[in-house]
Length: 151
Image 1: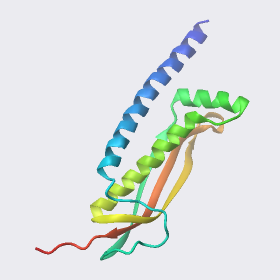
Image 2: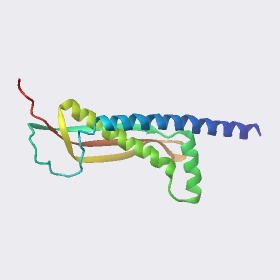
Image 3: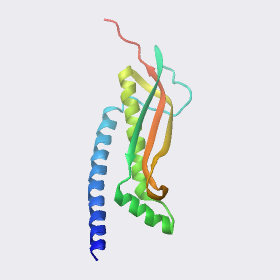
Image 4: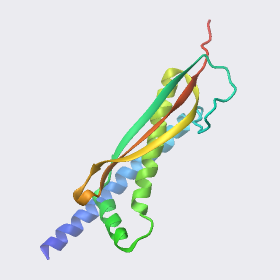
């Protein structure tokens, strides 16, 4: 009986702290997406017709671990099949964060548009029984750098 209480307490704590961290991260993502919306990132292979003096490779990557509650819910879903929505929000946050980091690097270069973007996703840490422990998402692309105004 004590084991069940401890398990349920850990599950509740995992849900509470995991949900808090996820919501905090989403708020940060939304704020930074607003700040960086002036740098579009497009998947087209060819650069748009624009004035640029240089190009550079930019990238952004993030590693996000899976919390205990998501791992538990995903394990239940694996028993009955279907979408594993617990991991979908994890991957959504990771993709958006990687793109934001790539855009921040582009801004540091003085870039104004990123084209030919690619996303790579991988599981970099296997948890118990080869379950997902953490995922890495890397975004990369080519940034067009604006000509500098000479005063």
